[in-house]
Amino acid sequence: MGIFWSFLNPIIMLVMYTFVFGVIFKSKWNVDAARQGRFEYAIGLFAGLIVVGFFNECLARAPTLVLSNPSYVKKVVFPLETLVPIALLSALFHTLASFIVLLAFCFFAHLTINPTAIMAPLVLIPLVFMTAGFSWFLASLGVFLRDMGQIMVFVTNIVMFTSPVFYPTSQLPPIFRKVIVFNPVAVIIEQFRTVIITGNPPDFGVLAIYTAVAVLVCWGGYAWFQKTRHEFADVI
Image (tube, helix red, strand yellow):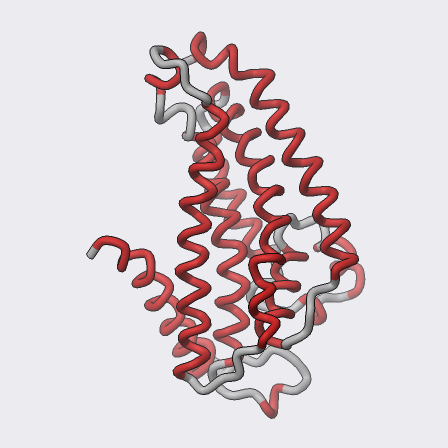
């Protein structure tokens, strides 16, 4: 079915989340729970999964990006650093497909599609820089430490369950709210929900700080990749 597969998975997952959390568990997000229907929790959950899904997909693939292309390392003069942007573009396409499914679901469920949803790509841009930095670092590290692929299975699960995906940050005790900001996707998930669900603009001050950190991570990951790439051929 070609490109349709990219839309089929988020459609099935969104239907499942709506049934399980909206119909069976009747989960609610906040103090306005009495005014919430069966779809709101599933929408908030799915919005969080879109963000963490992009991040985890890139991190899961990163350790094998160089290992899976040994001919590019040994026989061909190839800009290996472009493997990371290519993987990011692939993950971004899946993210776009999930975002379209989310908006379509809101439309058919007669839920309000807030005009601020158009700012969702702006919220994701800093995460792209952050993810690129981690991906370059892991792509290099995966060449020297072959178990990184297995390690990232645990890491991505930890990232998802320590992110405000299944719950809003406001439900956490104050001490944990200070800790969760160190999760690389927590801030973006909250801002992503803000523009899509609540209809408010993102906190540009928070995004500015996150962007500054993300650019540093991106630069550090790229610098590490470039510094170690001359040893790839010897190891592979």
